[in-house]
View 1: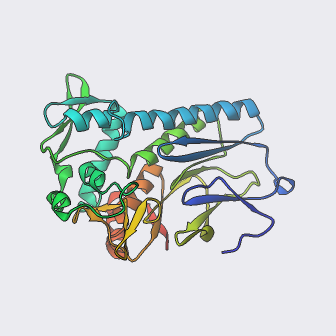
View 2: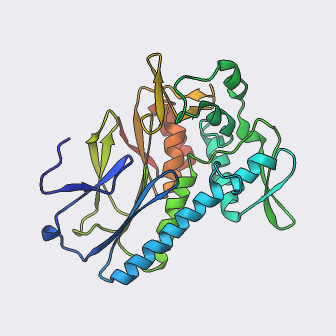
Length: 323
């Protein structure tokens, strides 16, 4: 897809870019922008507001939310809720924040309603594949023990002496919230913006995006979806307002070996990267957490089953683009 010369691409190192008009054609007030590395990607934030100080303070607050979720839910940090659970929850109850409990319970709900297509407890299989570093698959004997085990059923999220706690009933369990926590972080960032009176804004964290209100030209935000075969091009555009988008695909983290692409989206049934005729799928939903989890749950299971699972887990969510 060719983009008109009257527009330019901005805000996009991940699945999405924003199409915007030159300043001379904009009808609304000024915009404040910020890009920060967080949650394994570059988060881009835009606030459209005549009050520059208010806009910048709101962006500061939104970034604090994203970074808090990263510190709290990253499986790469031994001191995060998830890191501490992965180290100790097979032996004893591990206290976690209320926010982590919310995301874990949402993950378990997605797991049940997607018939196990979404499993937040496959962290050990994900670590074995380590697609960011590997150049060939791990031995099948290493991954076979995780295939079809529905490990989410071995995770308990409970209360004990007033605290939210996590327990594992199997030492094969390790939490990985990579398919849902970034969406939750975007939702928290959006809430921070709205609490500070922001009416028009956008938060774009790689493949997870939420559009508030209208863009700087007074229309709904126009979002371009990158072509997974050639990220320099767009495969489609969408207009959104007060809605979340999330894209899952096989072209973000992967390696090629023996004529097959091995990517980061693990199929719980096989404990291998999901096989799919698609390279990417984009979900629209009322919350970014739902869109994020929906994309992970739907990718690789076929569109018919995917739509059925999505309707069960997140009424109102929809598949808006495939490539």
